[in-house]
Image 1: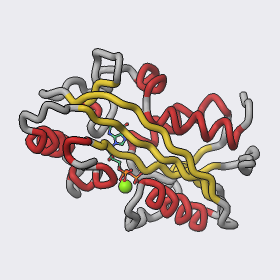
Image 2: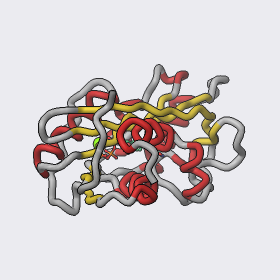
Image 3: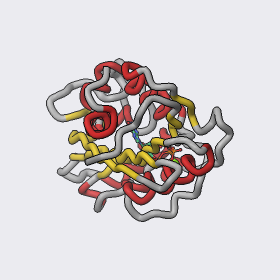
Image 4: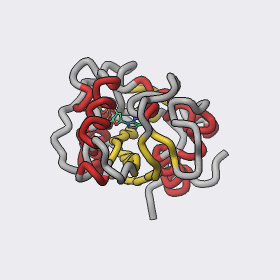
Amino acid sequence: MARRLTQGPLVVASHNAGKVREIMDLVRPFGLDVRSAGDLGLPEPEETGDTFEANAQLKARAAALGAGLPALADDSGLCVPALGGDPGIYSARWAGPERDFAHAMAEVNAKLGDAADRSAFFVCVLALAWPDGHMETFRGTVDGTLVWPPRGTLGFGYDPLFVAQGETLTFGEMDPGTKHALSHRAAAFRLFVDACLGNRP
Ligand SMILES: O=c1nc[nH]c2c1ncn2[C@H]1C[C@H](O)[C@@H](COP(=O)(O)OP(=O)(O)OP(=O)(O)O)O1
Ligand SMILES: [Mg+2]
């Protein structure tokens, strides 16, 4: 049985504005009082794990201890089977310190070359840590294919490259509500809601 998150402040332990916006959208209907790690002045920990789970957990743990509040972290990325799973947990790092995703998307496409297999999937692991060390972890994925050139200016990161299975628009062309019905983050979030928030609202 997962530990429930009772009413009270929740820290969103991410320094990525695109992600924080999506998590705030997903949390809003539940009426939780939410603060971002940036608002609280929490530092950005080094992501030394070698799995999405390990990195989500270390970010959640650092924020929960830093704030003295339950903290929800997201570690996510784009996995391309034809590239051996890259960029995977290195998805943010492929964009460099300037977070240049035009460059990162071109890198993915160049490495793919004329590969027949342009399938890809996004992974999102959400970890919820309490200051006493308790942790709950959830994983969501969405399958799709990679297009070139990139399309759309909505969303963030690799969204303009990615068309989810059964869709025609890229995530970069979708309004946020449509992406939230399909995304890896929404899938992980549903598991988090079921386990930790119950049936609210
Ligand atoms: O829905 C998404 N749509 C497009 N791209 C995405 C998505 N979800 C993750 N991604 C890519 C870009 C992101 O930069 C990286 C996650 O890296 P990741 O370390 O988890 O996040 P981050 O460093 O950007 O912020 P933080 O660690 O403070 O939460 O994967
Ligand atoms: Mg990161």
